Image (cartoon, rainbow, N blue to C red; front, side, top):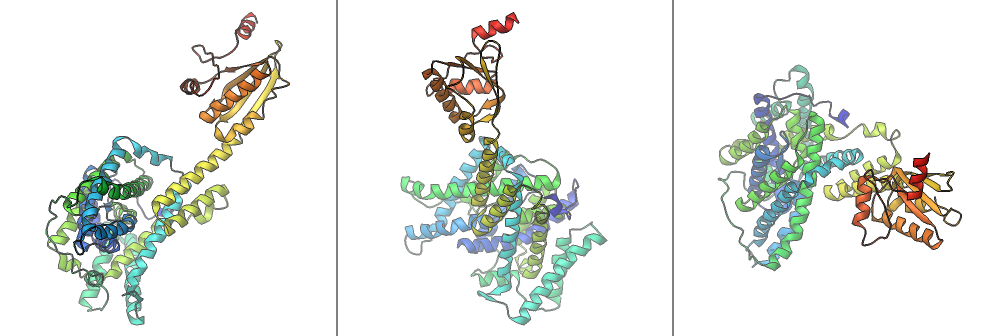
Length: 529
């Protein structure tokens, strides 16, 4: 997957790189935050506040320096229904949906912080590489399709002249970003491209969509506002309210953590460093709680802006802090200038992110890796585009786990022999778990076996309750035929697992300090030899 990111340089970064990169990210955050606010059916200022608070808190306290958080589309889609239902629950025109959103964000943050406190962030390391490839491919497609709306006006594609201007400015932005690094790498190419294209549009008096026209078209007035202020959500604190917001909070928490931890994992690979998933969970939770109290939209990590940051040289916490503070400065003092930036320049930057994000080596490896991996990559990619990231990743992990279970279920083998004492030995190879029970049972010949049987687990292990129950039933079958089985070379965890299951099983396991289980007569026979 790294081959898809050849444009990213491995460096330790610097203060200058972090500041310039952070400023570039802040410019790219504006239309994204505004667009996602429109999706959720709330004011653009709430989206911008959310991006500012998410970015600042996670940059200072998060577990992945260089990663950018803000208002995201994945969470905005869930907020749409929440806000609509919340509005319907209150008096007409009271806009209670917004208050329910803030309360939900507080509960979302609590869930996310608890996930970090209980060390659940480590589970992202268990996500297969095929799921990661599907994740970045799906996200690249989602980012690309989300930008296509910028080529429309009031739901219709731009007219021919306007479309050519838009395409030309997008191409110019992408061209600058492609060729500038070949000349110099002292400045972020994305920032230079945005500034150059903006100056051309402003001084050339080119009629094209800008940040301001984009906001006005969506129903907003501009991005100028004051500082966010503290307010408690104005809702009734009762079980009915909790029953309404809790499901939304759980969904938002899951989506936010999955996207953030997946992005963290990706940035780890790109920078060849290691982030702290649990710390990031707590920071994401704290940021969403702050959003709930200070009137922000909330959010999570943003893969597009994170890659812009890394690509522009941002490596430290300063890059994220700069992006957040610059966004606040835009809101407070520089809204008039930011609103003049042409949308085409920002679209061009995002298109370059798409090209860099997509794992193009997918097409090279499809006939070199197992078919199951290709299936998982395609599945996660499609589900990310059609549904959302959480469904896609969970489905990909489930399918990968089922494939793993199926393959391991076929690995059970048994070497059989009868020693000079007339005791039959079964030396097992492979794990005994729910998927391999049928094959495990087929290895034993209960009716034809002698009176004493030893099952040797030196190269095998008991994995779950299904395996314990299988041993229990096998023991019963031998007992009904007047025969006895003994378990040998059980590992410590297997013995512990069996002991925990004493109430549901009746497998008799005798053990010595080395977890050696065998019959006394057999021990004596070995000693005489």
